[in-house]
Length: 113
Image (tube, rainbow, N blue to C red):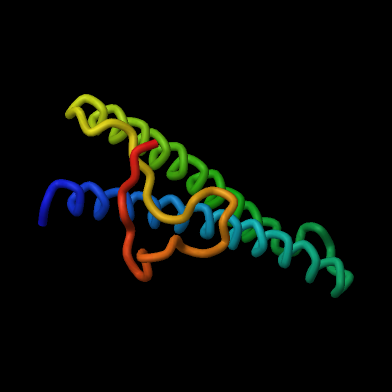
């Protein structure tokens, strides 16, 4: 592997991690919404499921902390990347485009920004 491939690999893993944490937050908030909606649909007291809902909200708070840590990791990696003289790079799709660029089917190419 050359340097660009190693950097692209780490960048891909970082992006996947960021997306996974965001997806987990979205899924957990959907769970809480579902819990509240089902309680209301069943005409149950707000006391019913309160502890479970509180635990789900604790999980969302923990996921928020995890997201902050991943963002901080991203910032530190970007600093190291520049410190090593590689400049600023992005992988994947161009902003505003819904498809990959020609010649990049299934692969990420680094481009200077």
